[in-house]
Image (cartoon, rainbow, N blue to C red; front, top):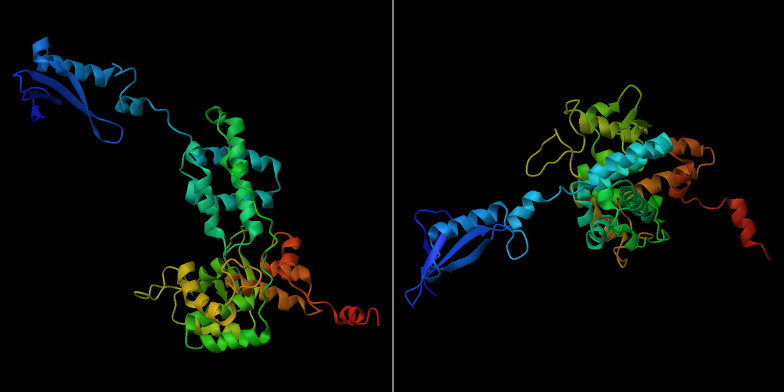
Length: 380
């Protein structure tokens, strides 16, 4: 094939000299993906010339359909702006706020803003598919309770169902969440550290001061991991001997009284910090007290040891038996309610739960001795 020669007079117009001494004229434009498309106009022997090829190019770009369809670049200009998830979510939560209790509304909004929006907020709803949702759900496996994962799924599904009902642009789409069956939350965490296991863990952490302090706070307050790593020096109330944790699920900050040993450790750890400095800050590649350490950074210092001490032989997704960051929270609540003098309503406050049922699910209480003795001697 002979070489294309660019017209010196018209943009996008080319010609090629053929072996039979004829000349063929062509023009080019870019499609929606930025790829050149070539259109053959005709031969000089058929009275086609550069001016005619240029007119055809202008007509194509402006209005003429090519082979019964518009060029891709024209389609792109005419394309209707797609409806993204955030647009539907705003209207959904306006409606939901009018028909739900304030705490339930806040919890649902929190789930969307923290678990759904970062992944899908700016994505067109008709482009959200089962594969992308499966990948999203897999992010939470191993770290979140199945009941929590199911609630994220339910919130997501409800938003899209609302969109299908209320937005004409979505009336013909199928909700991709309906294609994904949720799992029964039967594999919930049951693992709680014993007193001896806690002592052994601390012995192994003695040379890792930041990890040691984190575990002290986790086991001494029952706070959620993200709440712990975002505490600042000013959250330590020395006169009242409390540590106040930032709002997460419930939407309200809450203080937790500190036992004397933990209180002294926090005073020592924060003595050189400014009020706005974070107690758990990154030290690699350099110390920066003005921002909190990441969840992954803190986990990376502790989880390998937990796996070595307690998780050998267990599947990574075995939530019932593996020890994770959330085991500290379960351990705190369980050991606390073993004391007969403890009021479970106080535990609910310390755990920052909105409902008592949540506190009861977090605690694994042994049978009272009298009940256990009766069972042992039931048929004797």
